[in-house]
Image 1 (cartoon, helix red, strand yellow):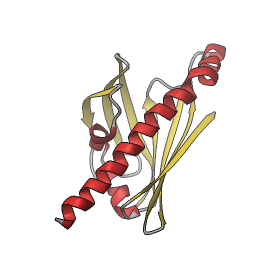
Image 2 (cartoon, one colour):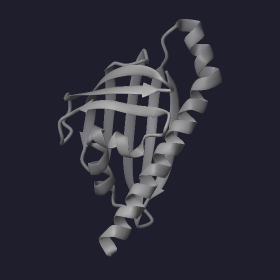
Image 3 (cartoon, helix red, strand yellow):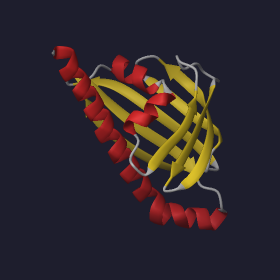
Image 4 (cartoon, one colour):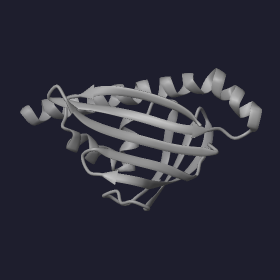
Amino acid sequence: MAIYERSVLLQATPGEVYAFHQDPKNITKISPASLRVIRVECQVPARVGEEFCLEVSQFGVPMRWIGFWEEVVPGEALVDGAKKSPFREWRHQHLFRAEGGGCRMTDRVSYALPGGILGRLLDATVMKLIFTIMFSARHRATKAFFKEGRIKAAN
């Protein structure tokens, strides 16, 4: 399996960032323009084994994900897997750690593409770039979300 990892420092507590991420509906608040969210079905709070469903369009390609929570550690970690996705294997760790008066959030994705050698070639040439663009945009949006929330709360 391939691994992609990216972190960002946020102006929030680990508990606040955890609470935001345990609701898959918040994907609409942090998704890049290339990802259009059509429908989200989920239960909150997150519980181990519970499923959630996402219907999205990425670069105009419709996709349906059925994910589930593998691990739920309030304030520290959320780990989702996929029962149905464009990937042969998928595990996404959302890790939250107090740092410098804020929260270091790390996304760690372990994945495998379908398609054998073609999938491995796609991963080696394009997938890292797609993940970098997507998670950079998501982290910028998450950072803005928590910064704006702090500004509104102070007023």
